[in-house]
Length: 313
Image (tube, rainbow, N blue to C red; front, side):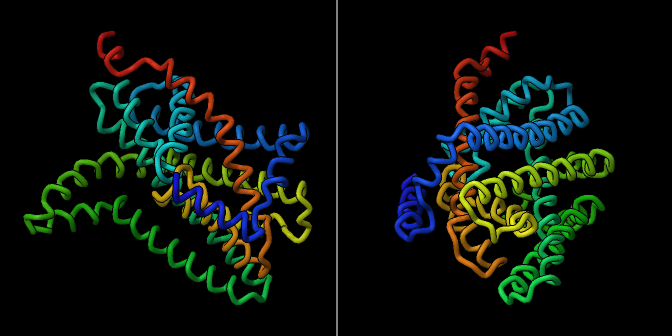
């Protein structure tokens, strides 16, 4: 939290984030309602993605239960470092729900993230590649090249899992120091491989991630319209949002606060060649909207059946 506060102070003092402008977005009923609805839609798409994964690979999970667990996870994202800290809580409570499949229940959260990250990287790679042919900006070409390398590397990583080659390579490693972590990874491998070999499920999960990012791009674009940033176009926004969220998953600050502001300030400048308030303001507004919805997660957490209660039923 201290790191987030320091970064925010620096961003505000540098003039790249105006708190009055940010506040105005939520004091106007029109902009506040639009932004809150878009944030809710993004949340629902991600919840449906995870709900589908769990119900296709494990026992049946009610949609309302998945909504509650995701809201609780979002709430804890603002407590733990990074934007994925709440996944630990989400996986823990799901594992308590499914006594005989605890490992797989926890791995469903990992699978959700693995495929979700692939959709982020893929969307960014495609949009940046298109923009690099449309704009003569050196920083954009560098960013595009780096993202394409990341896409190829991550695709190779998924290929190793799906094909089983990664498992065969791991079994060939005999160094005793690595045996325990390798055995743990091998115990996780089969569930991940089986789930990702389910092509319809993989595609549904992948495109749910794409659609959720499209909603976030609309959110950012609307912020740009509200604060008067006419030079920002939709494709510019769409190309950098996945990378920004990828950076925010690094465990530095709760919900990526501060980290996201720096990331989007840098990424927007790389694509447009202009340094402005847009990136930090847009991600700040998104974090505020998520925090508002996440307060319901805090209430659900206080009323949630705890693990001991579940075991006694």
